[in-house]
Length: 305
Image 1 (tube, rainbow, N blue to C red):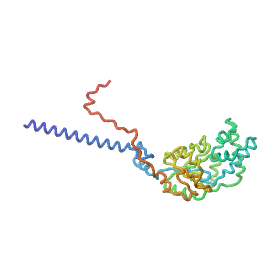
Image 2 (spheres, one colour; image 1 turned 30 degrees about the vertical axis):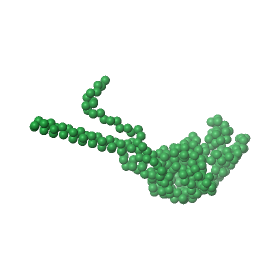
Image 3 (cartoon, rainbow, N blue to C red; image 1 turned 180 degrees about the horizontal axis):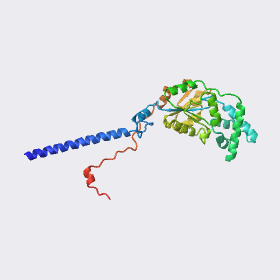
Image 4 (cartoon, helix red, strand yellow; image 1 turned 90 degrees about the horizontal axis):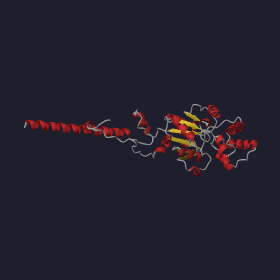
């Protein structure tokens, strides 16, 4: 009888140990699953710092990419068109129709020469024509100073107060762009400035927006583009960014493809920008399958080569 009691006690202890081990294994698996779960499109389970990961889950963790023409300063596209017409006359090229001139807004000069006007594909000639067009534009511009758009400074201050980084994206040459920013007192207003020299193509290609997001340290899905045309919306959509358009004098109904359309920057707020991400859906865990752990007795019976 004593032997049976000892055996019964041993079996009870073994069963209790097995149960405890299974509970612990289950808890560990749950913890591993929770740590690997992708909570939303901006989440990164690989981050070692849980506070940094938690910060990404908040929709306030975003970046803003602003265009130069029509957003930071008042548009001067009409002057650019005049420069193109003068260049065509100088070079004996066919005069571009209005619809082609309209397409040049926000594009690099080299891109316009090759793809819109189809003047030449010779790289040396393309560069020469682009430089000459820039000279003509500066001559037409003369001593005119760019005018800051209404509400820009207030928006920049609000973004800085809420720790939302902002970048500037433009197809303008870097030298002229930075000179203009300095003359306006905005040389330190943006954490990144993307100019024509940084990208191979301008709008509607999203290259400038993607490079700006990279400079800000934000994924495209957590960036808002503030542009001035449907081309801005097209480029933003292409890379998964939210799109806000400053209509200015244009009818609002012409810009309905954007997530948000405002007449001027003073209508924007951080809360309004956060609302652009309100429809983020929970993403199911991906690529994080848990492999079952082998029992010691199973390992004992295995033959290794």
